[in-house]
Image (tube, rainbow, N blue to C red; front, side, top):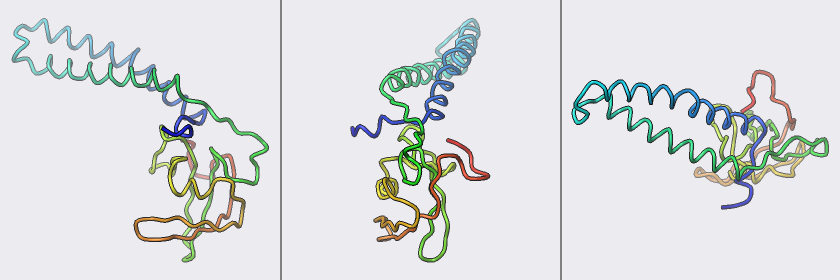
Length: 166
């Protein structure tokens, strides 16, 4: 696994810690209570609520183990003023293609990649092409449809208007 896959933004780490806390402190307790109540109803072999609860407990425990281990491995990358003017981890980048289509992406770690929030992984071909570039630079990205050319319009380390931080 590449070292870059262990990078995460502060907001990304906070989101994983919140998920872990919710699973361990709230959801697991609720499901455990529901399983206890279902078990008290009698024959467990034909008790759907009991079986479903036990299945959900296994899912929660598996995710909790993963999150605890993953959070130990992750390294938060905070914004630094030296990054201004160039694309680095955590940057919001507005791009324009040759047809005039404009897109905006944030470069984040693999644990916080989310296309609905325009958050792309540092390991993606687009992010790799963007790293170290400046405004007005031209980048080329190989996609399944072929080679695409993009021009960098804006680089900033705060979300663009109307965009959410991932």
